[in-house]
Amino acid sequence: MSVAEIFDVVASSTNDIRGSLAGRRTYAEAENPSGEQQLAADVYADQLLEERLLAIDSVGAYASEERDDVVTSGDGYSVAVDPLDGSSNVKSNNAMGTIVGVYDAEFPAGGRDIVAAAYVLYGPLTTMMTAHDGTVTEYVVEAGARKPVRKDVTLPDEPVVYGFGGRVPEWPDDFSAFASSVEQELKLRYGGAMIADVNQVMTYGGVFAYPALQSHPEGKLRLSFEGAPIGYIVETAGGRSSDGTRSLLDVTPTALHQRVPVHVGNAEYIDRLEETLNG
Ligand code: FDP
Ligand code: ZN
Image (cartoon, rainbow, N blue to C red; front, top):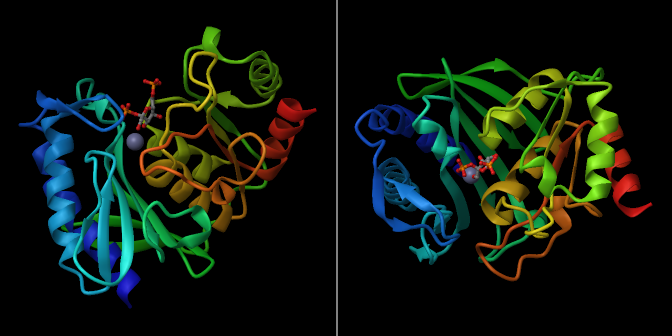
């Protein structure tokens, strides 16, 4: 029941988050804890979700990509939020998302403590993908209410698309070798917002990665807010996730804002990636 309540609160906040974008495309004064410039829209979505999620009885802690510290309100689940994933897309009016990971442990908690995760995609429609109790469900969100459109979502057996982040000259040689083989088989679909790019993989099958870079071996995406929740959703849908050697759910965080290389998709591609990186 309480996980459903968390998902309902996220769904009912999507209208406000989407509605806030038009007037909030300017940069805020601050940087987020990862040293990135914050948009007024990032700050607004973070404050809105903090207030509404912490008001739920079964939620005891709120952490977000947009603030340094955990906010607590008593016992209950620890909820990790990326309020506006891909927010640099606000300028070009391309897709963005919201990511939520529900952990049954204190922060910093690892993927094995996740009991549910979800993401919202702000595309032409607002959709939501939830994973809980071994099942993935896709919803269309209208007027703040979620209506299921696909139940028991699994990754398609015949993969079609790929999307890899980071500049190509920055990729390590072994990842470039993997990418070259993937290019021969799948179609490129890349929009620069992880949620939108992962949703293509959830819809058509394939592989998404934001790999380790030569200058940043830890990658770009954040483990608690992005990597682990997305790994949980993709694995619940029958796919695999990896940091290069193991499931993203098996990476133990030592810091709330730590980064991790992210690779998710159909098992055959993640298996091949790991063989190429470690072989
Ligand atoms: P953004 O910086 O726009 O918030 O969350 C980080 C993220 O977006 C991901 O959504 C996206 O996959 C990645 O960064 C894109 O990074 P690049 O601009 O380096 O491609
Ligand atoms: Zn993000």
